[in-house]
Amino acid sequence: MGYKVDKANGPNDLISIAIRFTPTTQPAPDLFGLSNNAATPISECDISPKIIKRIAKCVDVDAALAAEPTVLDEMIEASKNLLDLARYDIGEYEAFARA
Image 1 (cartoon, one colour):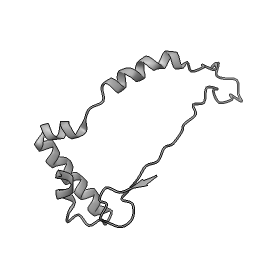
Image 2 (image 1 turned 120 degrees about the vertical axis):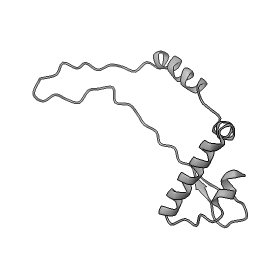
Image 3 (image 1 turned 30 degrees about the vertical axis):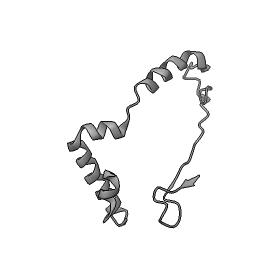
């Protein structure tokens, strides 16, 4: 899915992708018989509390960077350097990042 950050500029600026991973619950075959690993089924009921705790720890990055101007400056400079290495025009990036 593509979308635009700056609607005034031509094609899509960003794309979103989703990748689905299906966990393997069976250990790889042991052709030499050296391992006694048994298959461990994954229980959604067992892992759900961990997921909820991790989600509860999510941070609003915009608010965190607004509260730490020095860190924001460092992140903008680091991003500018990466964009420059990828041959992007960084002339207007800083104004965009601070908007």
